Amino acid sequence: MAYTTIDNPEEYFQCKLYTGNGSNNHAQTFGKDTAMQPNMVWIKSTSDAENHHIFDSVRGANKRLIANDNGAEFDDASNLQSFDSDGFTLGTADGINKNTSSFVAWCWKESATAGFDIVTYSGTGSAKTEAHSLSAVPHAFWCRERDNGGDGWAVYHKNNTSAPATDFLPLHDTEATRDSDTRFNDTAPTSSVFTVASDTSTNNNGSAYVAHLWTGKQGFSRFESYLGIEDADGAYIHLGFRPAWLLIKVASSDGKNWHIYDNKRLGYNVDNNMSRANLNSADQTDDDVDLLANGFKIRRNTSALCDSGETIVYWAIAEAPFVNSNGVPANAR
Image 1 (cartoon, one colour):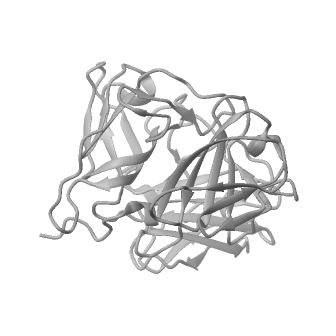
Image 2 (cartoon, helix red, strand yellow; image 1 turned 135 degrees about the vertical axis):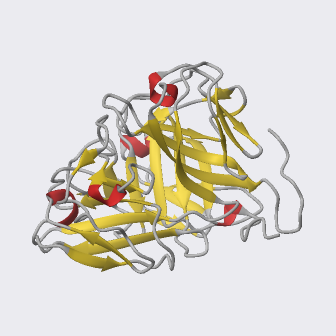
Image 3 (cartoon, helix red, strand yellow; image 1 turned 90 degrees about the vertical axis):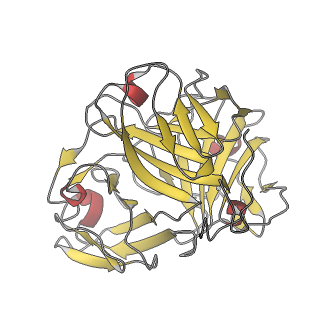
């Protein structure tokens, strides 16, 4: 039985906590047994009200997009300086390196093996396909206009509805799933392409775009959904791995924030701090979830995670597979 093809998830995803110093060329190394050069770095202050900053190597280190708004890409020398062989180097911008502030960085390596791809393209205003390099059908992705911001982030998730290509979620907002044929042209992605239509969030004529795409890999990542159970002793979600990172969103009703958890803030059950991807607020310290050896468990009765009957989508990336390719099981936390 093949449990996983990725025994060491740190080759493809790492989470880094650090303290800003306000100085240029502030290098951050992962300090793990496994070196990883990231291709996407998502940074958020955990202590201060600062935006969510997303950088990737395809657009270039200095070019920042904000997850929690629909503003244009910002190119500035004070942003991220470089993607390094075992980490990244910061500029002086407060949002990523404010002196004495605390930060978290979520970092991905682009790889078909791990199911993550970054695509840039030019908008035409007419429905078209864009090639990707996953060599598998994308399970989740988002598109973003870089020049003007347009309508902000358009998110596809395969479990959003029964016909996910007809709908989208806005990453920068609390809105529920919205029906639209102008985002993804009501066309499901394939193992080689995804389709964009005419909306400014996905395909405005003459604009530049970026898309970040994921597909699930056994023992490493899952992009699925669960039904809410309105109870502090909430749903258990089996992943087949111990999660390092979770992004969770109620898809079926308005007014629910995007929640992010990871294995470093604070890094032990019952304390797993939360950031809201659609807000610039500092970390929330309620005890929402337990991160387990083979999944996660909802432990607080909050409408963003467990309203009865709600469809709740998630992104999950592994810290360790539940059982590696040699049959060795993961430890609990």
